[in-house]
Amino acid sequence: MFPLLSPLHRSLLSGPRLAGLRWLHAASVKVANEPVLAFNPGSPERTALQQALKDLKDKTEAIPCVIGDEEVWTSDVQYQVSPFNHKHKVAKYCYADKALINKAIEAALAAQKEWDLKPISDRAQIFLKAADLLSGPRRAEILAKTMIGQAKTVIQAEVDAAAELIDFFRFNAKYAMELDSKQPISVPPSTNRVVYRGLEGFVAAVSPFNFTAIGGNLAGSPALMGNVVIWKPSDTAILANYAVYKVLREAGLPPNIIQFVPASGPVFGDTVTSSEHLSGLNFTGSVPTFKRLWKQVADNLDRYRTFPRLAGECGGKNFHFVHSSADVGSVVSGTLRSAFEFGGQKCSACSRLYVPDSLWPKIKAQLLEEHSQIRVGDPVEDFGIFFSAVIDANSFGRIKKWLEHIHSSPNLSVLAGGQCDDSVGYFVQPCIVESKDPRDRIMNEEIFGPILTVYVYPEGQYREILQLVDSTSPYGLTGAVFAQDKNVIDEATKILRNAAGNFYINDKSTGSVVAQQPFGGSRASGTNDKPGGPHYILRWTSPQVIKETHSPLGDWRYSYMQ
Image 1 (spheres, rainbow, N blue to C red):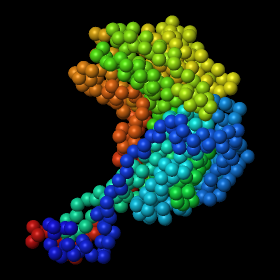
Image 2 (spheres, rainbow, N blue to C red; image 1 turned 30 degrees about the horizontal axis):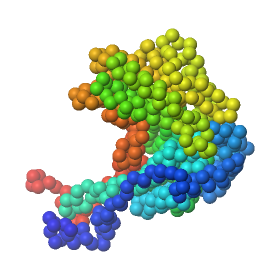
Image 3 (cartoon, one colour; image 1 turned 120 degrees about the vertical axis):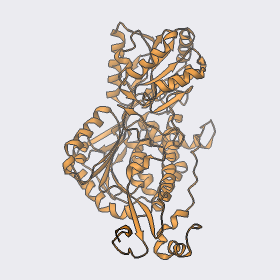
Image 4 (cartoon, rainbow, N blue to C red; image 1 turned 60 degrees about the horizontal axis):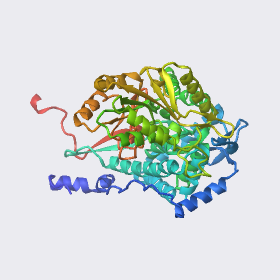
């Protein structure tokens, strides 16, 4: 076990005083990505999902704030509606006020020490069990609530609320236990070890509507690493997020480790950033909101007991760059999926497409032909649609203003789509726009809707256009290059080195998979902490190094002093 050490030191390292080092030899947990189910007609998963959807039809679930084991209601009652049928209130919930958020913080802090002292392996088992529940008995429920509450199609719910969330829980557990086994070297007569402590205080998790999995990960990852978490879910994902919270509790997560606290954004932000015990913020959302929270932390810096960790993912203005050597079929298929799946509401969705003039006639013809076959509608009643409504009235109104800009701008022309109707649901037809100006604000600003803008460039100027792609937008999240010429691929990879945190070659800019393509970007897109990878959990631990010496220290004098 210790072949290079003397018998004395082998005895020391094997003795009862160092029993805590036994985990050095623990086997790593073996996990794999959760298979994505097909939901073919007659399949068990399709039958179970259709029953779960039927059970939710016309139902409104009452969802309280949860502080420990106490379900709390305030007078500030809100409703989550189904985006594709806004007459259907899918959830009734309430906003926590400042006093209730502070109560949640106090309850969390009281539980933090005991939770942090639990072995990482014990905490990991809870998340592994939660993953098993989501993979099996809770799968249909979580998919149905994601479909009805967030207007996802079957496949988009499956890759999010099932596969990705399961992968987050399993791989994070694996990474945490592997991290626990990574220890410094020991030189006799001393031994060294690292204890991966949770942060001192609480972590505030602020999650978005567009991925159920992100909500589970923003709250779950810090909790796995020994932290207590105050979780503010998105107003438009309450139904599915509460289901995730209940799965964690069912899997054995103790009360007070994650507090489920829906709240007004400004009230929540003001309250958590004013607490001296804030130790971290785990955020996915808009740039203005993240900047506001960051500034509040800066303004309150003198009151904190520790420097808070700030992790944020804020979206992007993602690109597909097409070279003249590209495979046209791949460009068309990849761009349609990236731009229009889930109505362009993925942080990674392609919204700007750069095409050489030599390929544009062929790409345009195929894009318009395939676009004409895209159907938008109710994802529950019709499994054949490609995407459904956008998330809410605010989103619909914002996208409608963009469509007005398109129609009024002399630089922009609609090639297809763009009709919108909010009489039943918040429906926007997929829109393809051509821009004569590569710096029109539609090429620069995030839309978060089903609008794709194309700029056609002279084939011989592809190097200049690569520079343009890099400099046009303040974001740096995802991007793709389509080319068969290896020299062009190498050149583009260098020029666009900082333009995307997730960079794709001959593939679409969406669809990152946990443990395969850890996700995140920099610039205005966030802090690029790469959730889904092994390093992410390091953001939520404060390591302590312990050195223990096993023989008397001897004389204080150095030998050369004699």
